[in-house]
Length: 307
Image (cartoon, rainbow, N blue to C red; front, side, top):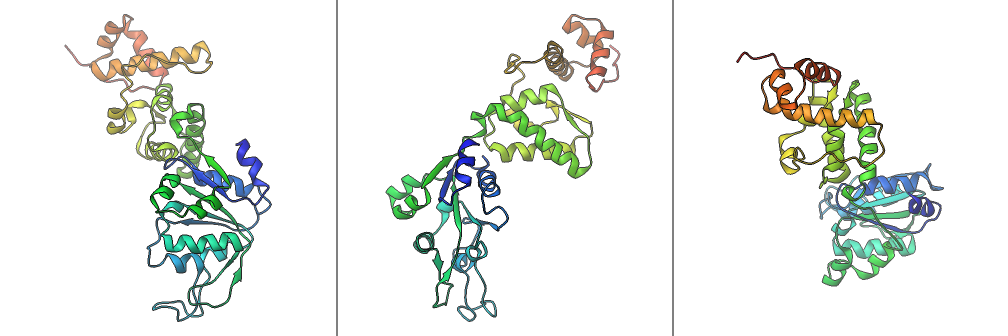
């Protein structure tokens, strides 16, 4: 967060790049909340979600009678509503070129004209833009204005995908768990094997995918302990880690490391064998040991089947 902290105190235009779901909007909000504008509006505009025939009036506002269906008395646009604060242009690469010209003028002059209007309106805004698209390539292809690109990317920030930030995964997972436990009034926990999966999975959907998976698990799993086996089948198909060796990528107590290994072994055996007797035989321990450890790890113990 050092780069974000350093740019928070200035009004420089920022372009945040990164894959979908990496947390670009979180980074933008972080900058705003640590700036001198933190008590002023933070207006989020998703440039890709506004229909092209409405985007000009949505961004810049309109005057009464300027088009069929125009608001009586006129209406301020989203950029104007951000006066004094920060305007966050999410997915700025989706802006039509006709709007890119008008946006460039607003950034340069800090003025705008509503649709159907004749007077300039002063706006004191800080622009933060974000995109998951390759804007330099779009500039080469002529689909994004070069002058606007350079105006937006005075300070370029790239947010790496979650798979390149392995050390953040567990911290984020616990944060989301706490949030959704509080939201739904639960007290659920993660098992060691689930945390191991979280650290090993590639997360193509990045932070958004991690958050969605955790919310889904919290509301659908009956047990207070959420385990790897509770994950959606498709997720396990994409990243089958059952055959992977146990990987320890941080310092653990021997007790925690042993618990992680034993949980994975017991769950793998339980998925393939019908009784604790057979599990014990396959693991080379007494049946009483298997029962005791499964109880200790809050694992479901199947009713013994007769041979």
